[in-house]
Image (cartoon, rainbow, N blue to C red; front, side):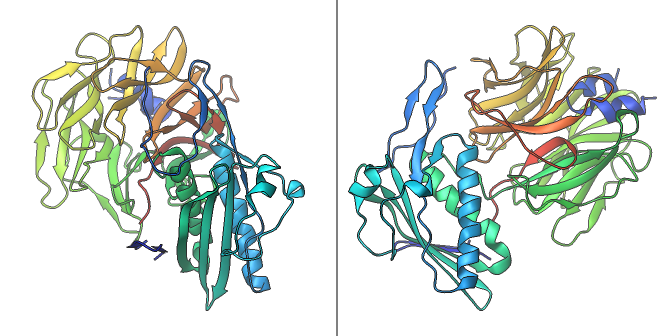
Length: 460
């Protein structure tokens, strides 16, 4: 358990198999036949210099003097924390690290007065000071964030504490506080990504369920490569994962407990099952079931196994995703003649089409903020990741590539992760992130190919 403390609070811390395998996310149909406002006002928060018209942001210069330590062990830990925090902030493209060789003064104590003139002289806007200690395998870091321009503190005496094997989580929590304190956006660094790790040639590729930190570190495999696994989805508490497996020869949904390692199948569900997601309260799953040649959306109560059918028509209804309040479901359907996005009550009933642009739409995912829906769009031979308001207005395409698919939201609703597959016989998928503004497209560097990402909620 990681604890957070400051002066004011304490917080504990007859379907074709190959089609399903290769085209599940956006092409699951073929398996079966801006104006944006972000941020919240805060006191003592430096202003970002943003040119909205051109989409250019001048990164904020931030300095990291050596953290105060008392011994060698603490010094090594402090350097690792600094490295992780710097990497987190740089990856946002909102921050620029001031080079250490330009520093005029040092910090000898976290409580010592800051010589703001020395830091302004090297064009520093933000300054991080911290004390790190390691005692009895417990890491303690106390840090302050200074607004050099305003000569004031943004955070006073914030402290994190946790076991020595939680160094990365502690560092990500520091990053989250700096990021949220400066930008007004919600946290997202202390999270994990579930995805499909892929290896081998395109015509004989193995797929394994994997999990990692949001920055690509701490990679762990959760399955072997004996059967094809697709589309993992986190539970609201980040302790379980739903996914689709071809272990029985046809697509079936499974639930994995990440704490105990126990695996749950759903024999009570008929036919082929796929495209699962949790309800916001974690008590139900919503998924597609194909039985007797018809594909509809159902929910399953995880406590009593009661099943409820939400759609009833001859169309292909799939890829459901709940709104954050659980009142609505967005999904894709060809009921109008081609693949489009619809919204209906979470109890079922009449559905309203919300996508009306040219091309086909799929894989809709509701933003954690509830204001937007991300989707995959295919038009004129290109794939796009896009976003629209929940009523379908203000559609905006963020990417364009041979294949871009499977968007998933960061917990703060500002950043999307997806996978991009390159063309040709050697084409392969990789994970990318991008902001909902269309800025900062960034590839996640991994040792294997990767697809089907799912971003966890903030870890507890």
